[in-house]
Image (cartoon, rainbow, N blue to C red; front, side, top):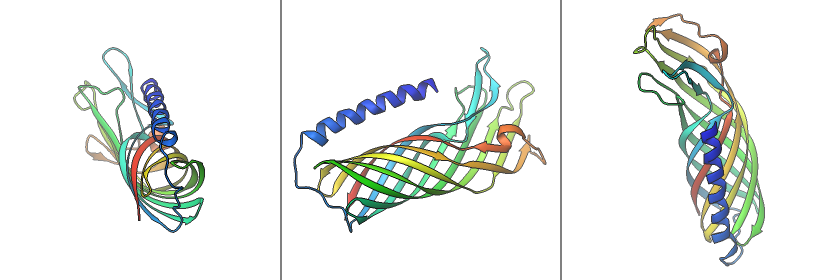
Amino acid sequence: MKTMKIIMRKYLVAVGVCILLFGVSLTADAKDTAGKLRIEPSLFIGGGSTNVDVGKTTSGDTVSISGGGGAGAGITLGYGIAPKLDIDFTLGFERSQLSPPVDNATGSFSRSFFLATLLYRIPVGERFDIKVGAGAGFYKPGELDIDAAGVTNGFHDVIKYKNASGAHALVDFEIFLAQDISVTFGLKYYAVTYKESSATRNGAPGFVSGGKVENLDGSGFDLSASMAKYF
């Protein structure tokens, strides 16, 4: 979590610098995105709300993994349904891993998602909008795979989860580089829980994980960066 706080501070500084460079100093005709399509690929990194402890390092530090956060990518198809109102549909993928990473074990949790988001534009300048939005999402989880078989008395757990739905809220800072091209920096919070459907330990079926793993909290926040083309 300390690492994520450092990343977030650097991210906010970068957003502030970009706003100063592009949102204030440049001038252009006022943009109008109503009735326009937008294609927007993005990259993101984030942190989960809840960490699940899975072991300890040789120095005694706790090793954990989260059902939220990690790193990923997505692509958004947006449409301006009114001068200050957009609707977005996003396909994405995200993967979280053990924290801190260790040499004798691996662990990951991946999921893909489809999000529908309604956003309200708040014009700040000719080149800069703040977009506030909320919506719902459908999440298709992969496997929570914890392989610590190389450790003394170790194990290899593979847990599968049911599909889930959740809600999210976000704020985006969109900076127009031209009339039909923009870059966006965003912060999103999402809430979702994954329910276990099956699990194995060391290849044997019927294992019940229990606790936080059985009902995995997939909530968290993401910082994103993207570039959009309007049509």
